Amino acid sequence: MSQRRPPRVGNNLQRLRKEKGLTMDVLAQLSGVSKAMLSQIESDKVNPTVATVWKIAQGLAVDIGTLLGGSGDHPRRFTVTRSDRINTLDMDEEGVHIKTLSPLDMVEDLEMYLCTFTPGGNLNSSPHFPKTEEFLTVLSGKIRVTAGDNITECEAGDFIAYHCDLPHSIANIGDSDAVVHMVVRFNKRNLL
View 1: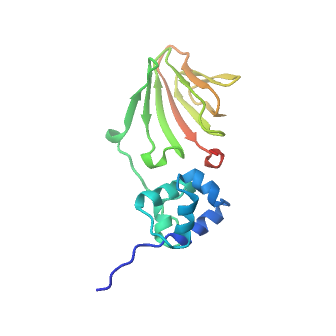
View 2: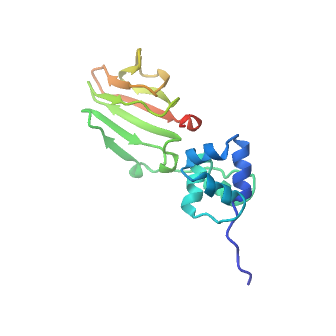
View 3: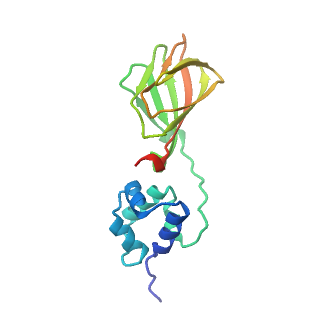
């Protein structure tokens, strides 16, 4: 029986980094893995830990299997999060309940939420990373969205997209609960 060697991620790392137009310095900042370690991995001088490969994959915005797999094929995602596994956050602000719909491995990449605002409920948010965007679809009720100097009111069926890298807020201005589907998209190339 032959002994299996651990996967060598160097070629995949170099190919993916170049495909995305990233220097080692930029990838080091995006992943939190030092430039020296990235160089050693690319030249197959070291076999990184799973944690290091995961951090690099997050920095490249790819699935960890893409670094380990050895082929250019991208794994196909098919993830189900059952309703009993969805976390609900009750915010410090009175009357705001947020369900996190997206899996944890998507944090600071693409996040999805179902937000319920009781009448008068208000969610005030600090600026996110540069060029981060929020996309809201109002499922029911009436809300006011403020992003910097921009203010608008939205009702059921309305959709709004805005940069949220400045102070922003969502407030229920109606007499009944407002339910909003929110998607937050981070622009990782602008985290530097």
